[in-house]
Amino acid sequence: MMKWNKSSRLFKTAGRYIPGGVNSPVRAFRNVGGSPLFITRGKGSKIFDADGNRYIDYVASWGPLILGHAHPSITRAILKVIAKGTSFGAPTEQETELARLIVQAVPSIEMIRLVSSGTEAAMSAIRVARGYTGRDRIIKFAGCYHGHSDGLLVKAGSGATTFGTPDSAGVPRDYARNTIVLSYNDSEALSRCLRKDGSKVAAIIVEPVAANIGLVLPEPGFLKTLRKLSHQDGIVLIFDEVITGFRLGYGGAQEYYGIRPDLTCLGKIIGGGLPVGAYGGKREIMEKVAPLGPVYQAGTLSGNPVAVAAGIAMLKELRKPGVYVRLARKGEKLASALAAASEDSGIPARVNNLGSMFSIFFGIEEASNYEQVLKSDRELYRRFFWAMLERGVYLAPSPFETAFVSLAHSESDLDFTIEKIIETFRIIKT
Ligand SMILES: *Cc1c(COP(=O)(O)O)cnc(C)c1O
Image (cartoon, rainbow, N blue to C red; front, side, top):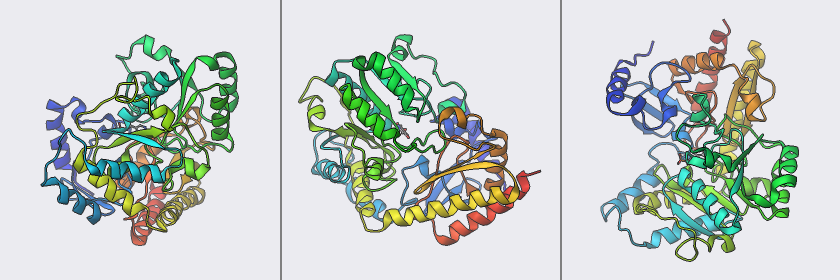
């Protein structure tokens, strides 16, 4: 049996000073019970906790660490700039380099603004869409998470789902009123909504692949319909690619599916494990952003030199040939092992997989929207999670999160994980 005494002690102390002992709610293990692990270091595919246990990590800091922990290229890039000063509040050449790399990579982005988180990126993209169209309403889809800004915390996924409080306290009714929530993959509902209110809608924001309720794929034609209908009504289509950007391919989900949104939100991977977000898109829309235009958005640490250096090093690794084929092969290997384990053990489960992302939903057959996902068996996930953790595999402490494979996961890591999956399915059966 693994010992977690030191982590539990650290968690108790943290709770005296920090609400719930964590700085982001999903870290608190509420959805699987028990006490979170305190991590002391990571290297490649592994993380190490305060009690000295070692795990193969499939959380990857919730998505950013596509090269694994402490990748030498990123560490080197950070060390190289950090001694020259950590923030100037004035432009640096490296910001242009990261911006150029992103513009060259992502098909629809002509101009881009760097911010410090995905939340800021989504919040700012919405503001720009409103400023550009002169309209107030936005459409989002149930279970899609776009950060924690007021108007977007309406039926959000991720941590908000975990706690069963999709509508946060403290969000003014007037804010939420301008957010229309529709069901993911429901083109019909969207079409009906736009026939009535299309001319009042500033933006449709969507995760092109929903990855904050576990992994839920867009059905064929869904994204295309979004593109077509938003275009018809002069609505700004925003792809929130904070997870899928540089994850699903070097050009993100929009390249993968061949659909060009008007604006794109990025985060996670583009910071190489440091805080960076970005929003960008059509020049005509981005020229509305201050100081060029009337839409205000700013940030003391935006384009921070250390974070930008990490981001540049990350993208330079990811544009090497063969990266995404290798990633997808690893993701598919684990996903098929999960599906096979479910089949062999007679424990019904739905496994969703795309590239290096996957998730398992126990006890349901279909997982193509939020409503279906909520019917999955959480108790079974809880048992699965703890049995895997005991065996040295660190999965997300919630059934409503996506697992991420990195380039650092070796074949032997994957084989080890599969062995543990098979063992675990035997145990949770009873
Ligand atoms: C993580 C995430 C965000 C929020 O990013 P933060 O950096 O946590 O603020 C926004 N949108 C999506 C799709 C995300 O996965």
